Image (tube, rainbow, N blue to C red; front, side, top):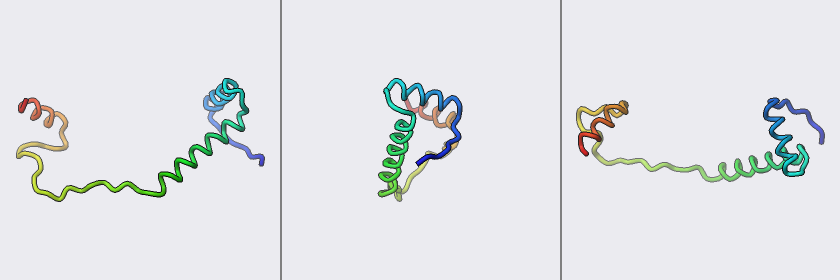
Length: 80
């Protein structure tokens, strides 16, 4: 089947060079890329990852701001 693609010029040049290095056609290179991408989508779509949720008590020590990297690093240095 023939189709028209609008590709970024740099991407097309890199793809053509890759195809030449592999001694294959640009069409075959694009087909292999699409097949690999679709296989990955099929695998990732089957089982969503469930992240664990902590339901215990606790949290940050009083006076710490969990949104401040500087504050957390400073507190970690104080404990060392």
